[in-house]
Image (cartoon, rainbow, N blue to C red; front, side):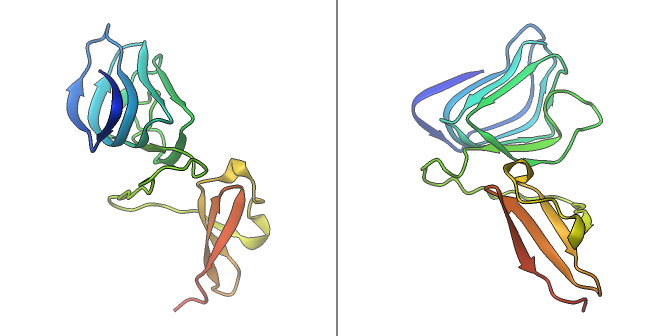
Length: 167
């Protein structure tokens, strides 16, 4: 599917699609707020070609064949649920967005996590140093004596939300 708009295309949704094995997948330009749910790409060509003219691309329960390519030039993976049991080149739930340094209106993502999300608990002395490589990571800091804090890494910095003592 080739979506290259001269003006912005807002709130695009694609659900329950299965691409032909010899076809290419998604070419996206100027798409704002797109949701792709249960998309299967069994081919080995280009599964996704998106750039920073798009923002807030949400992929949920999608599968792109292992040998296929995913290109997201100038975009940042802002959420990644991890590899699905099917494997492939895109994980079970992924959100791509433009970096926060890009001036665009409406770049905030509203992501919903269904069920439980496991967040690692890390001792204060073992917290990773603030670094761009840690961006988009969330941890629970174990400060000892029941003191727990939420740690968020973003923009090469580390932020602490004080949780206080156990209640």
